[in-house]
Amino acid sequence: MNFHGLEFDGVPIGQDVDGSDGESISSLIDEDVDFDHVYALFEFPAMVEGQVTVHDGEKLTLVDDSNSYWWLVSVERNGQVGYIPADNVETAREKLARVNRHKNLKLCMADPEHIVKSKMKTIPPLNARKVQFNNKLVTQVFVADPQSGDEYDEDDYSYDEESDEEVGEQRVDINGSRITMRYSMIDPSKGD
Image 1 (cartoon, rainbow, N blue to C red):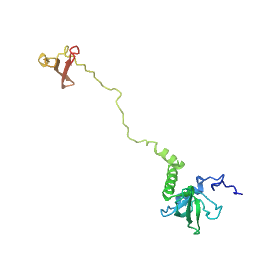
Image 2 (tube, rainbow, N blue to C red):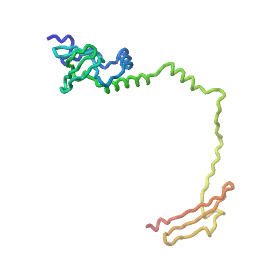
Image 3 (tube, rainbow, N blue to C red):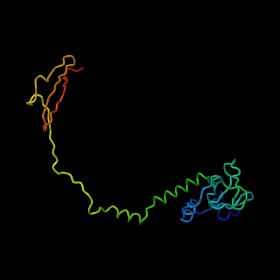
Image 4 (tube, one colour):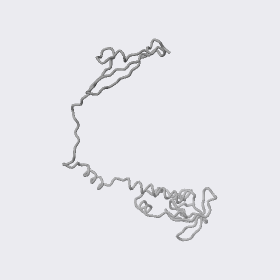
């Protein structure tokens, strides 16, 4: 039996079935998706009686999908009714997803004119305002030692016998601001 260059399941040999050439993509993007129909995913020539020939992207009406391998369809352009492989049928949602994928890819592709214009916009104008930070950063380190400071007052120190904590308070002047530090020290040798 001569299959005219076709595989046994009816898929053409050596043809690009994913629709990746430029013309089919542009026609796919421009086409409206009708949710009342299904579409042929690739070309299928009728081989035996009861099958119908469909072309890539052709609008079909689904008549019977009870068989998981062969679906009965009606071709919109000529009204013929016949079976095609179920793998060759694309639902409207699947087609919409494919159309949107191609549209998104087209939107994400780099446009050389856009790249040149965006580089021109990144050059700062000569009269732009500038912010400059001081190189001499002023920092002060403060170490609180209640035993050695002039500010230490014996009245600020107390011992809490119930919790075995030494608690205290120290007042310090820094740059004209009065700061009060409260602290507590626990004797680690006492334990809980």
